[in-house]
Image 1 (tube, rainbow, N blue to C red):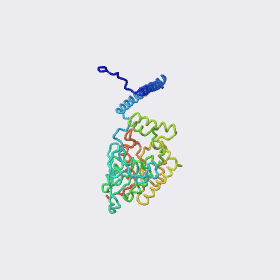
Image 2 (cartoon, helix red, strand yellow):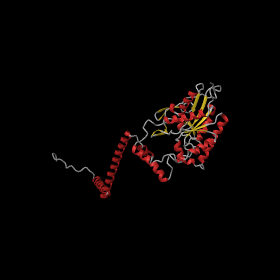
Image 3 (cartoon, helix red, strand yellow):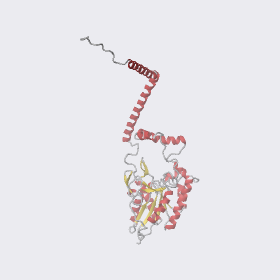
Image 4 (cartoon, one colour):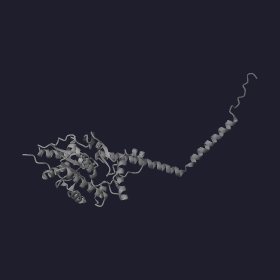
Length: 384
């Protein structure tokens, strides 16, 4: 009928309406299940755990800040910027922990740092100025060459090049032999033991053609076994370690972990494991004695003067530890001339974070060698 509006009926399909209702019911049931899945007791435990975790984080942050404050006043770690940055170049082997097979030099012609001091190497891969190759300069025999072999102490780790005992010795000898060019050629490399010392001597012999050989002995030189050398670290995935290593709290914890772990397991401390090499029945000691004798025989065949060994350690400590006399007897019986710091001189490290000898100790080593060379007349006298 014109003028009347038709009745508007629900356009929604009844089936769709029923499905929507069922879906809403299921969602309500699921929500109730999820809400009821955690009991009040469990909720309380989760709350306590979250609160405890938060307290741990706060304590860690406060401890980190306190440690950094203490470190700023009194350093707890080696100061940044004083790390050794030099690199090595492998000659033999490749496994640093295999003392029998490894041999390397410093990367030639590099400029690096050792405890903040310049560390420059020559073309031969040793720290110091360059020197002529006597294979190419056979007529060049006017200088008197002293080949000095050794480890990081001889290389001068932790001090300036000019403060090494070899440079000080050269200066002292040049003063009393003004008409003879004295060359003290330093072939020391960090990490060397007597095994590597002998190898590098043979390798560099024709190049240097020395008139005298000096071996700088460090008390861990008989040791070639490194089973207990690497520090024990807190076990964890590497990616977590990468994150935590930026924390001073974590680094200090690992400093404590290593000695504690060694004590529990009965392993020697890192500062003591080398002492096992002094057991005369050990394989390390037998190899050490053989290499000392080999160096002595080699120099006897090619050099007029017997080799000299300088004891680069504290004499008093060596005697109290029981290692001094076995070392001295091994070298002297093999034909070496013995040299050591004068009585009253003590071994002094560079710092709490750098255990290598400081400049004063190097001066004492140089004086010991100077007195020995002069007393034994190991350099020909100059004409009056």
